[in-house]
Image (cartoon, rainbow, N blue to C red; front, top):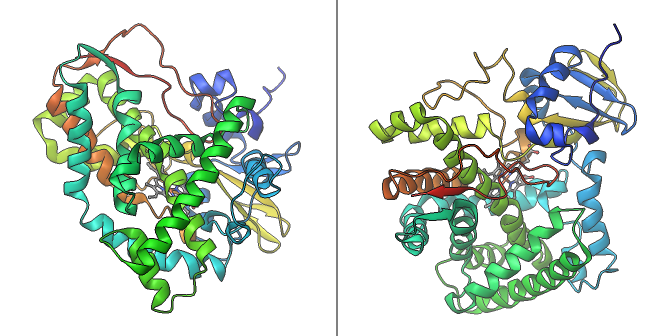
Length: 413
Ligand code: HEM
């Protein structure tokens, strides 16, 4: 019998209906039969074993840089940088996003950002609770609503806006720009969405520069003021690096956290025993959110480049070889997680890789965890009888490369 062809990286995206419906029907056989899989068409290796993914990500000698499978998304940025879509972002912001930088620039920029962000997040619980309550109040006593549009999309944007220090009077504009800028993550967007994206990116960058200038003169209690103070105290950061990476917190943190909240609520609504467990013991929320990150990871993949000729997972590879890490595949590896396809909010010792690892480990992880914990507990406290509006309907996963989240999540309260 002829062997079934193993999927390449282009089939491992939500644009492929099979992957969109059940990614593990493709990822499980790939991990079993070819855990370090050479995709000759794309010229990349795809890794699906937890030990290989975690081990290689924590190798600090690996290069980041844009890998080939991420080319589509990077191309968007490249197009922006060529200004052929009308972008007017200042030149000094180009190629300064820490996600795509290598040492020494990566850590030079990341360290002061991480220091300032972690301090802010550590005291943000009351803010997150306030934002969550505001949006739950707006849903009020509606009998049916969309958890994504009415709640999960709202919380991360409003929280980061307040942490950054966006003026209350500009909050609505900021929400529109954030939603527009996120369109840059979709290489298949329509011409109309491209226009919206360009307008949003231009407006966001201009507003960020204006706020930076204001806060340098008159600091307030916010992250922009923190970054301007660090620069004044001698941190080696240019204005372009600060502006672009402040915007990066938005782009990197909004959709991902939206999806963690949406996927988490959906998982509980479709696993009644687990929801009952959480209601009986809300102290399980920390391990519940970790299990949501593992079981339905918001980000599919990340990448690195081999810095020298080396062996990865027993496979020899040349310097400059692109490696793609399937975070979703690694998070369901039976070698790392007993009964990996069981959703268990009390699971212990489950070192998932949903936030990547090593030098580029997600800088927003503490904020994402806090938002999801507060949002999910508060949601079920407010709507204890929430259930899927149409339990027969299949979930509608978004068709956006690299991310897994619901297009809509209709519930009856
Ligand atoms: C559930 C929510 C989130 C998920 C699943 C997620 C996932 C990831 C992943 C997979 C990476 C790449 C790590 C690697 O290559 O090793 C990353 C990097 C990053 N994330 Fe997140 N993220 C989330 C939320 C956030 C938030 C809330 C922020 C900002 C406030 C943020 C900002 C960033 C930044 C700036 C980087 C680049 C770090 C670096 O390259 O040093 N993320 N994230």
